[in-house]
Length: 118
Image (cartoon, rainbow, N blue to C red; front, side):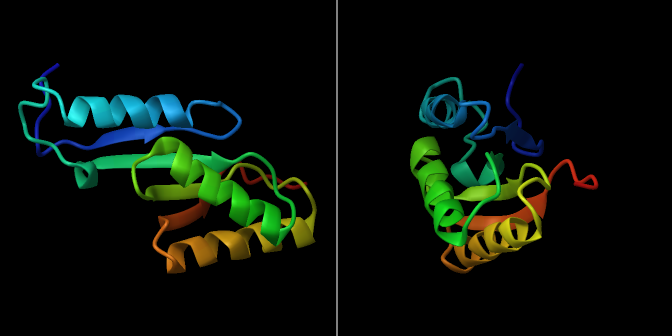
């Protein structure tokens, strides 16, 4: 496959998948390699990852920071709450952590994955 600048290159990772470091490393390696014939940059890659579990604000905030560090890409394009579990308070606290990460520039967009009644 030849990379093209007018295509979307998306990576779906998650703390639970334990693939953030590997995916981020592979992205960085590709972007700086001769195989990157289209001259893609970090902003051409859409990187998604997900919170392992909803809990307190402090735990979620620390977890988001760890994901940013693990991937090594400088920021996360889409950060998702992976599930609705943990109860209403944990969901709200985790979401507040995502909002603060957006405000701090660590995350571009926040969202929810696998929303079901819990």
